[in-house]
Image (cartoon, rainbow, N blue to C red; front, side, top):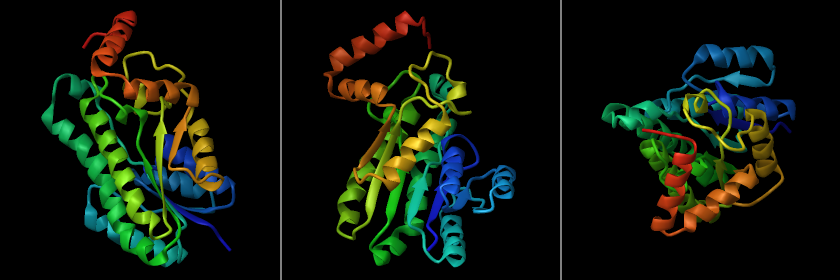
Length: 253
């Protein structure tokens, strides 16, 4: 019996690497993103990857796309919602239009995606819903107000959804990566400690989704454990720690 997965944000970065990883492991993979040409490159290269273009900010289109996916595959075992954007320059200048866009894509886009599959998993009473957040959602970071807020909101939403879906025998998995080299992190103008490749992220997510049962999948652990410690520090200590780090790398807003 075929194993099927739907991945959003699959045109580049972690989503693309994850689609390739699952395809190489023999899964049937439905991929979605706005950039249809990049999705076609994937589906042309891999026989078991199929393209379903989607702008996740369109809630009705999310429903139509998932309907098409179910018609093709009949069953989806795992949904991975990983669409995300970041614009550090606009956050430094407090560009409200772009900040709203970040929230619209990162948070509400994920909610739209979850809404499209919600009834299906309520009836199916099995499977996994995977929400890709970030360690940036643990605490506020310089020049990351909207991005951090969007990821923090996703983390809280995933925690709440866990309680509800557990009663339906559906696993909710939260992914909290550290720095991963993608077109999005290429925009950062500061050193990124312990940065890893998208392929590394895909491997960790594959293991977490197919071989483990916990709530949070976080990596690389040498970095995420540090972020978890910072998460529980009092504000006064946390602020001093970050400000000291900013001075060390000569980071200026």
